[in-house]
Image (cartoon, rainbow, N blue to C red):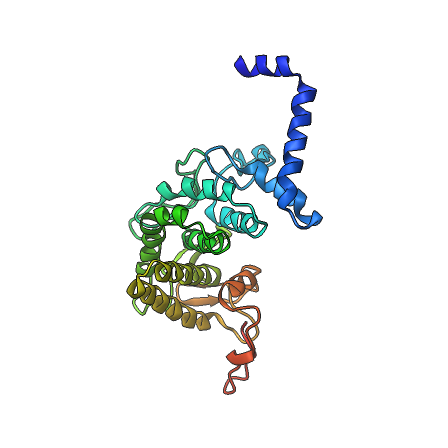
Length: 291
């Protein structure tokens, strides 16, 4: 009723005009006109509590009886990275605060409702494995490092370091096979396969490299060394996925699934610097750079 009275008193046209002017002013940081619509789309999805759902459309309600109004931390991580690179800090900070209490024993579940509860999932719950997509936990650390490297907000990040970054990184270090060169099986980013996936392992590598940088920044050199060592072992383990001219997408029950998948391109960018030279060439196998 109070909101209704407010609209009647101010007038709808006046409120819409003020809204347009606000968002026009909000875009002052946008350096390129081409990204303004994307920035507005991202900003419109952030909730007051910092939650960032994947999509607010309702198209799939007609045949799936559900929607995409859930927080997948993989999607959200890339969204807040984009916001940081565009110079926008506040909304991403709210999202990280929203995510901090969601960590359960160091990992994130597949998805959450916008009020922070576990979202519905078709991943089975058993005693044999966790129903998670491990890349989501890792990408949150990666996104946090990019955010921090741009804004240098020490007071903000210090409260997330031990209960968030270290807790997640310690989980990633523990969720490995006996040799420490592969992640344990989890569900892939497409929610279709259960196994060891190139994109997942690449994400864990990127997350641990980021955690190592945080540990170094806070003066915990021994912790930084530990995270870096595990990350390098995982990077070497990615050689298992190389099938001659591309990276395979998965290894399921010990067998390589060599189907060409777009996720391996993104995963490669998380591991191999874009300016990396052909130092990965192997003369005995005649392979080109895997970067």
